[in-house]
Every structure is written in C-alpha cells, then in structure tokens.
Length: 87
Image (cartoon, rainbow, N blue to C red; front, top):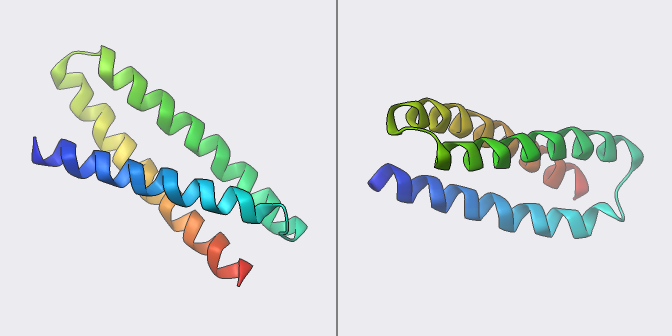
C-alpha cells in the first residue's frame, strides 16, 4: 500500500509540474517545444499504462507499475531539463 501511495504522490507532482510547464511553453523557444512534444507522448503512454494497470491482474499490474515508475522518472527528468532551460 505504501508503494501505491508513493506512486500516486509522484503522479500528482508530475501532473502539477506538467500543468505549470504547459503554461510557460507558450513563451518557450522552438527547440524546447520539440522536447516538450516528445515528453507529452511519453505522458500519454504513462497515463495509458496506469489505466491498463487498473484493469489487469495484481501480478501483471506490478510489472506495469514498475515500467510506469521508470517512465515517470524519465518524464520528471525531462520536465527538469525543460524548466531549467526556461530560466
């Protein structure tokens, strides 16, 4: 249960950061927009994996959860790079 709470907190932090960055992207340089679009595709995959995990068996959802955690980490790093380059 603790891992699930941690995952939910991570997803909520990513959602908040995504929303904040989306607003700032309107002012961003073109090269950042390409990275943003790539990261948005990853975000869509993450959301789909999370939705899939909810419908799969418990054992399978652990595998999906691990993959989603890895993808969430990759998205978080991309958001940090974008935010750092916006400053």
